[in-house]
Image 1 (cartoon, protein in one colour):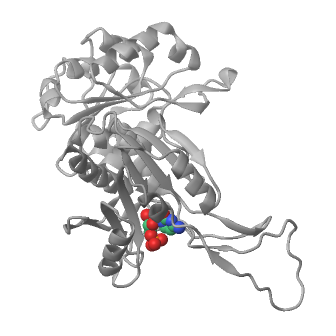
Image 2: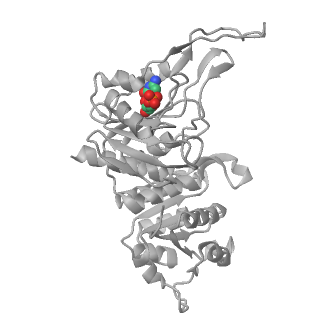
Image 3: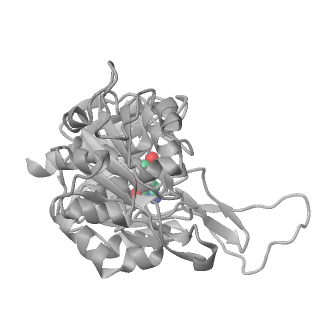
Length: 399
Ligand code: C5P
């Protein structure tokens, strides 16, 4: 999904560097052209040879080094880059970037480049919270550097235990790079409510009716919408996924709770994206106690759940995007749904296509628009599907 994108990865001296190996691999796997540059300190953690093998290209370390024949000089690297990503970005390098220094190949390349810069800071909690770092990051944000906030968790030093400052997960950094490589803050100020995951409809304290939706598509949409500057509310059914940064998050269990939350968080004049796989039925009765084994038959009556989209469509005051999962004659059924639920866009996926649908990280979808237009997208990573959908949404809003 990064084909033809040139990504320069700047590596600083931090223990999180082991995740940068994974980042470079993942970028290559997603067909990016990758060049790695390292600060001298970074080479004390991992030798350039490792990054050379992972990126398939020479690694820049010393700005005074005479380049080999097929090398890109570091000054050229600054022109070559579509996006520069610094991971890990240490407090030291962040400070240097904030003041415009150019004392090594990483800082010099950033200073000489017009490309968007994504920073994935990693440091101990005290450094992260230090006013100096806070101020430096504020200065960089004003210059439109993209900051992938670090995460809370176990830090490198045993003495510190848990804290803020772990470098963000590779997927979060990739999302930010993808975004930086494609779009400016196109959804700035737009209110977007996204639903995700499955609902669980219990008929006793431990048993329920549900489906296999993982929540990945909805979470990718929420994360990408936030990266595009939207004001995002994410309402999800039960899931193991971590809610993205900067997103208002609500967890619900069953469809009626989801309906209530969607009504409460209805994005007036904004966008509602219903990516949740809501159970169409629920058990008629709920038993407070676990149902005992008795006889050889248990009858559970199911009654229909409210249709959330159809309910809010009655007083529609936002752009509505729905999803449809069909196994046969999918476009016809989806078009019916689009009309019936008064949608502006419906995203159709067919779980029978390998790599599409539930519980996988890729998806193959077709977009059907209210004006009759149809657009088929290739098999893509769900984050890129999210980006495509949100770009169409932005276009509709701009009209
Ligand atoms: O009718 P069907 O369930 O296939 O429609 C799918 C779309 O409708 C999805 O966007 C889903 O989130 C939404 N939906 C809903 N309320 C339901 C069932 C589905 O809003 N009870």
